[in-house]
Length: 99
Image (cartoon, rainbow, N blue to C red):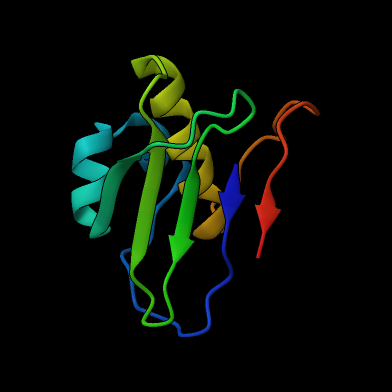
């Protein structure tokens, strides 16, 4: 999974851990104004990327061949990282790359 670092602070609604993990994902993405798309990256080790553009907009890229549960989990984990939502540690096998 990949996360980028912001270069411009954009004001977003505060997201609590409860909201991050209980809101329907589509509602959360809309609330945070996250643009999402399917990427053609087919590497088995790539689960998704959340890019924060210079203007602060978030773009979520998810591979086409993932099941809905994995996609949901990855999207929430990436959002939690970028938005600095307090979360339990992820398993050691899950690696975030921050650029």
